[in-house]
Length: 256
Image (cartoon, rainbow, N blue to C red; front, side):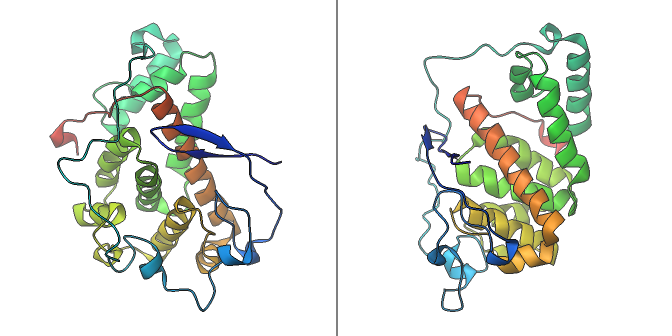
């Protein structure tokens, strides 16, 4: 297969890239560039703390957003009407209300209500998200850390609005969330080695580089595939939210 996609929340481009089969021992190449020797860390490469913002040390190359900077989310002239939960298939609407109550949403998420416009797509996407929530092998904290890093790299305010809330709900501290989103160094986060390996994969892939072989080895084949599937799923959700120009979800402060 010779196709991949790259999301920028302001614009979506589809660009052709070549995918080649390879073993996990060689690492996994970045999303945006063909596999090559330069795409795999070597002994001569600088440590990850100098290559990736938010890991171990601030590099000085990242400029934090200022209050005057425009938000990522832009209002557009065209909006797709998002159906109310009551207007969806009754069984799907019931599942969305249960989902909202379980995870502290004031209403069923706009993204899943939008998916419900297409028969069977809404329940399918909700089911896939449920599998990631229930079956991610490294726990809720690691899952939310990966989603935060992925959403932040894409500039997805919609997904960040949900998963900042969810990260705090499952036990990540404000300091850990700040470290994952930068520019606070990640040493401020008390991550378990497996949680850290998940985050390192997410950070490197988001930057278009190979997933680190040492992280892949620590996670194992099953674990690495689970992380890759999680990243891919939330890239898709972020793209869908961006295309429909969904505004961030809002939560009551005490629901965090």
